[in-house]
Amino acid sequence: MAQILPFDRLIVFDRTGDTAVYLQIANALVHHIRTGVLRRGSQLPGTRELSVMLGVNRNTIKATLDELQAQGWIEAIPRKGVYVASDLPEVRPGREIGGGGALGRETGKAGEPGTGGVMVGWWVRVCR
Image (tube, rainbow, N blue to C red; front, side):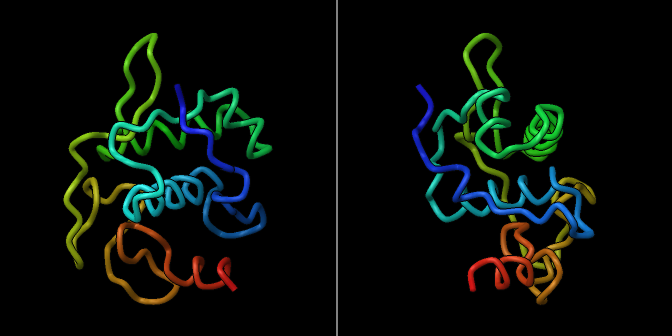
């Protein structure tokens, strides 16, 4: 069974921003995986449920999960669900994640993707 977390409060995004919504959601999920809010092996809600929680189109959630799966953050098990990967990708500063994937470079500079692929400048604004 999926963790019952307030995803609508944990995942904040800006529909008018320059970064695609699915990437903002992916960055938020990576942040919560790296900080332990979402633990290894935790089941995520299904695409329909998550899209309703966040008020986005189901295809946006599918794109988010496709990106996270391609980068190794989650595992999809047919007819079972989507889980946080038990073997998380190694993230090193100055190195691209997933060969230039959506989460970008790990520079740690404000306004650019930083620690764990989370957009530092974006998170600073969200957390104020």
